[in-house]
Image (cartoon, rainbow, N blue to C red; front, side, top):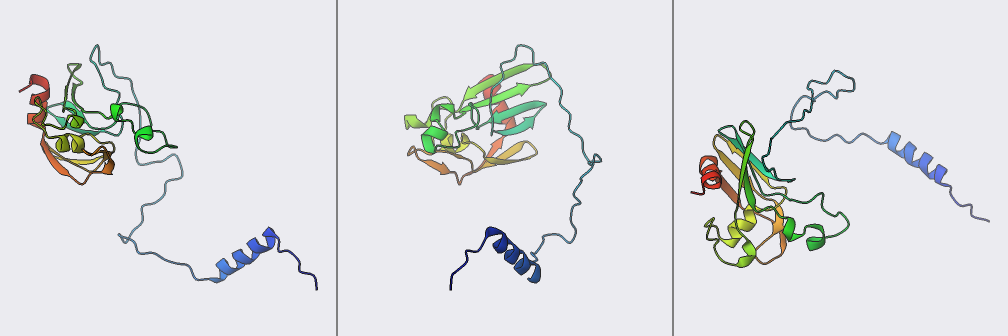
Length: 191
């Protein structure tokens, strides 16, 4: 007796029949209601973009950074200064250390001014004289894709992916509370 090879079409028909006869698998939901999926032009929000003139203010080219607002000013820290990282590489090839943002930026969109100040270089192995931060603190405040929440005039920053003090890539497990009033004053006036 000769065996006939099973075609892909036959397998798909059998798989479809088995799936149709089986009971649906239902998962638990966190809420008792579902958000409706909007499939027409009647979305409940609108996005619009407009160009903004910052005059001669120096602006950083950052992505994946942490941000807060204080006294009408924008505060930016951490993130990357290059474009999207290389998805085909790992470690230093994908996240070169020289493109890790170690500056804190303060931008005033009304007066069209900006200021920035370095947190320091964690690879030096000593507490930075200008910022007073240890290498571990600098490393934990300068990764990419950290999470943050602003509550009043404090931003809470945690996580992020970057180099630790042993020059190894890690996801940071630090939670830091930053006082925006003091941080803005330190960047703008140097005190």
